[in-house]
Image (cartoon, rainbow, N blue to C red; front, side, top):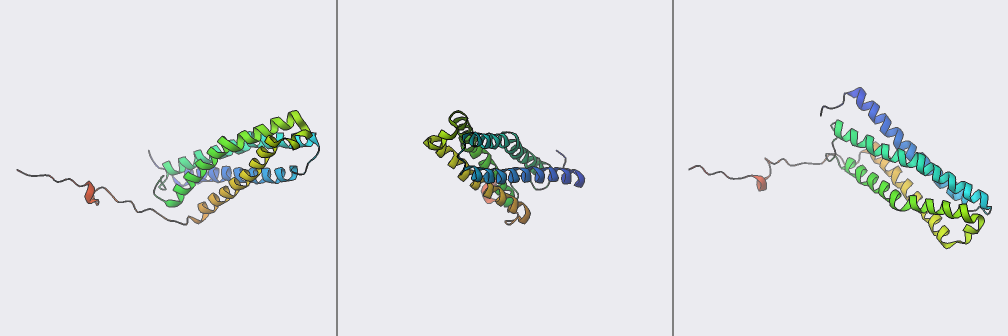
Length: 182
């Protein structure tokens, strides 16, 4: 596959930065909203805020996280950076996939459950242990995720660990085979 020219790479990189920024900004906003919601006693407000958080998760967080992953993959594939040539790229891959997985497995279902409970129970949800567990999980997990997104952005800018040293098959004595001449 041919590599991207400079202009194409810059457009793809701009899209990657935009999706990462949208992901980070929305996650940070969701934490602020969830913190404000933690002191709500009105059932209608409780549900409205949870529904807004769910809306942001479903229509902004999930697409921007996945598009960030997709554009990052294209940058690795179509530029000289590669998937495994640099430690910072490997870190970003592992961290991004981990964040998307934990969001899918835990945070999303917790937010969906909290929204459903607050829809049915309104202010009584505040005394429901399952609701309290779910909403605290969303708040704490969301804060941790947001810190990791910020760390990914910092690693993208700083590129702290440099390039990996990859030994070629010719240089490795374990991979050499002897041939006998009769």
